[in-house]
Length: 529
Image (cartoon, rainbow, N blue to C red; front, side, top):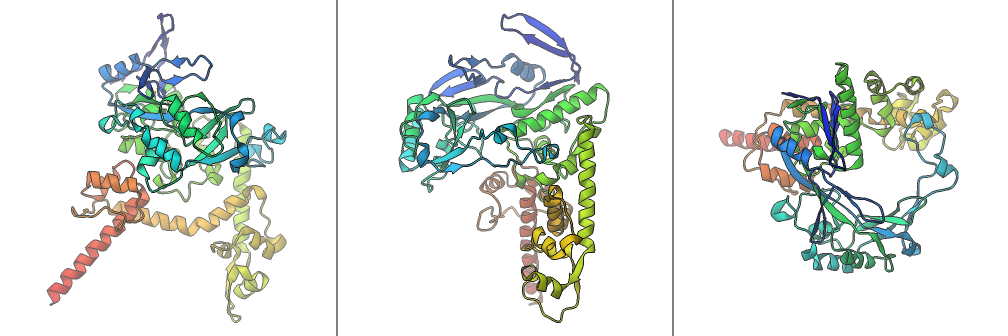
């Protein structure tokens, strides 16, 4: 195994500089042997600079050769795209439905609770608007198909792009029954007229991009300031290459994060950067690795999927990929992760830890109040008929406030209106308290389902099993496509296929179990006759 000693940097004047570093995090983005594609034109580069001179940032070629030739990392090719940037002064905003900004804004941190961001406080608010494609747009998209680039990767040079944020060409091609696709017009800042037409990426020649955009409502007079383009780049398949710390198995002290690991999306890259950086720092002091489990956070799901399943297409994080998604909520992120982050040295602020302790105490007190307050079922119904619906008048059994709140149609506000001063739950923990009570039974059911599936991983899947919507309606088109392609022999083999969600594996287990049960019943009837 190699050991990281540092990096050699090549400067713009071709001089070289060596930097000693026992731990290095490589985040190449789209620059690893990157190629920009616009129509049939190809330019070596990782990104086009957002400047008037249209300068292209050069790709990283030497690093790719080091990875391939010296370390023999399994490199593949992926692509992504960005839409044109258009002149917002020429958009007819009056015919485009508004998508208003949240006001007051919900802060990411509980430390900022009760405070609006400065721009919102000052009334400097950006609103997005909505346009959409139409039959004319789709006609142009397909008419100019022949002008699209040829790629290094993908089937027949079609490129290997993101399944869940596809180009407008892929959307029209893949869903011919659709007569419209949404486009969200997103201003890029307070002090610019640049607008990002979200949903309209497509590396056609610039004049064709303009024709396509002008076919849409509100964009009839628009001009392109920067054309959209695709970028194709190398990535390193993380399967058998990376561990859960994102350290490479071959080179001690070398960590990878972001698009080089096969992901796409800002949040996915940021999540890996946090984990790789934390573990690179921890390795310096031989500290405990910082690893999150699949039951602790979406970051844990993301990294576990990558290093145990790998990926053959740009990976995005979805809630459906997590078997514990009911308990992985935004309202309890601080409860799940703050103490672990502090242990890893990522949090030094005593205020943040004190805020967590205070929230934990308030949640505990609030839950106790809900457990301790009880009324007869008839009293609940009398005080607030909506809570209990039709109730027999002779019922004498009691229900606690927590039991009543667990009912789907009951809200915490309704409970408080019945209980009065006996239940006082602070606003800052109300969402979390309500979610804990309402999801308790679902979390228990989720846990039982996952335990049942884990025990059945050796279950044989019939070779004649039909993977289609009619038989497996809850599975996505992606999952059915991959199951038909790989034809796994057991549930354990199915679990290793990238893109097959844990919940779908549970459903598949139940489906096959029913098939075997029917076969057994049929055989027993035949034997009896």
